[in-house]
Image 1 (spheres, chains in turn red, green):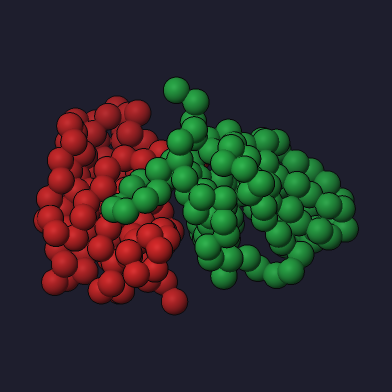
Image 2 (spheres, rainbow over the protein chains, first blue to last red):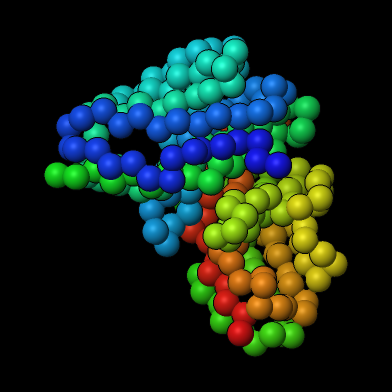
Length: 113
Length: 115
C-alpha cells in the first residue's frame, strides 16, 4: 500500500527553466511533508518542508506547494541548474504515527545545459 | 559541522555471516532512524529510537535483524545470519526529536552485498 506516490520516474528540463516535481498521498493523517534530494553514493539531503497548516513554503529557488483537498504537493525549482540533477524524494509524516517518514519512490531530475 | 556518520561504507560478505552496521548521530539529536533502500521497495523505515529507547520496530523484516542504541552517540544494526536478499543500502538518520516536526538528516549509507 503506497501511501506516498511519485508517479513520474524521471523528468528532463533545460537549464534556466522551471522544474516541477509532483507527489500524491493517500493518508489524510499526514501533517508534515518534506522533499529530499539524493546524489549517487550519498544519503538523502533535506531540501524543504511544509506543515499542513500552510499551502506554500519558499526557500530561495525552491518552493513547495501543498493542496490538502487534492492530497497533492509539488516542488518547484526556478531557475533549474545542472547541479540540481539528482533523485528527489517526497516524504510525509503524521504526529499520530510518531512522526515516522513515509517516502515516495523518487523522481530522477536531469537538468540539461 | 559533523553530520550522521555511518560505517562501513561498503560491506561484502558471504551468506550466513554476521553483519554489523554502525551509526553515529548528530550530536544533540534525540531521535535515530534506520532505513533500508532497495530497488523493489524503495526507502523503508526499519526501526527508530527516541532518547536511546526503541519506539517502533515494526519495519524490521525478521528476527535475524536487531538494533541497539547503547548511548546517545552510537547505534548498531545487526543481521545474523545474513542472506543474499538482505543486500541493500542501509541508511541511518537522526533528528532533534521532541515536540513539533523536524527534518531527519541522513548519513551516506552502508552498501551491503551478501554473496
